[in-house]
Image (tube, rainbow, N blue to C red; front, side, top):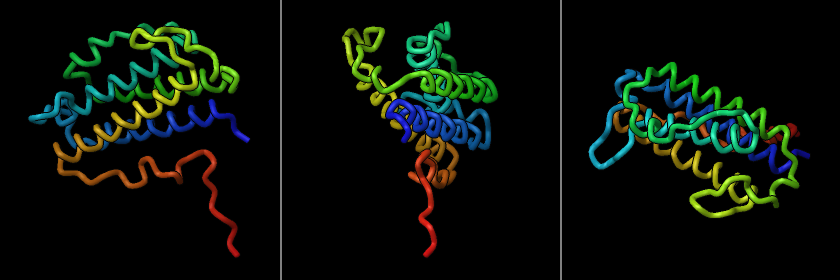
Length: 172
């Protein structure tokens, strides 16, 4: 049986990998940075934010990676080459794999090591929050890409078939 922390890590890896696919699905790199009226953030901005957020909270705070976050740059940089965005996503995936594989479920009841938005929360609550935060912004990136490019949704992007425990039933 897989632990809760490992399951949370696996979902984050799935969603970050889907984010990478979304970023790569923009036909033109400039579309990644287009801002649509009524929407404050481009797909590129959200991708930078998610990669920075995960590298900070999971990689640095929980994993001691030494990553230094520049949150302001995540929302101000508007012309980062797509390949750099993808590399940031890969680093976030690496941070999740490295850190979450070293955690056991006992950590879920511990306080998260840093204050979050000025409050103390349990690590389990915050890890679940990070998963939902990632999936929320992933949906925004998907809609942004489809609005800007007229593209289709990525099939099965966050499907239960991509969960670590998914297995086809035996024929019979």
